[in-house]
Image (cartoon, rainbow, N blue to C red):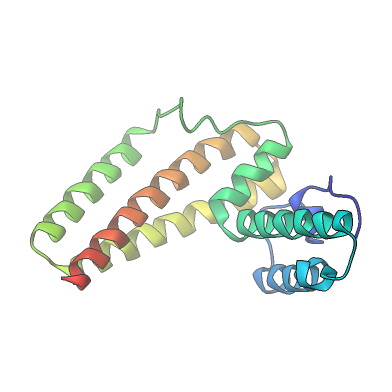
Length: 177
């Protein structure tokens, strides 16, 4: 086992960029987990077992962070000293604010009408919007390195993630009834 101070990209043997090969990320994660899993250190000293547990925890955190586009972009920005300020900076372009309001209205109407198909359609629209923003991030983070512009896109993605989770929860509630 090597140094615990590696960043998530280094730990998982991935380039420090937004565009990642997800199959390769999965493969590197499984390989690392096999090396550091606490079960492999059951007969080791208490110190080695503790270090194994720390490694496994860090590997899990790194994988969860890099697997999801929003957290990966946020982490990459943090490595470059940029805070996305999602809690404080809620300013959004007017067109995005309108889109948010339209989504919320559509979702509430569909939920009130118990219309799972309409909720699914909204989710599809949100996924498409998120994918378009993720494509922008590939260029902005990996090629242009326009960190502040990327932070604004991460704020948008974060909003979409939240509303998608809300819609998925509503669908789940309707399906459970």
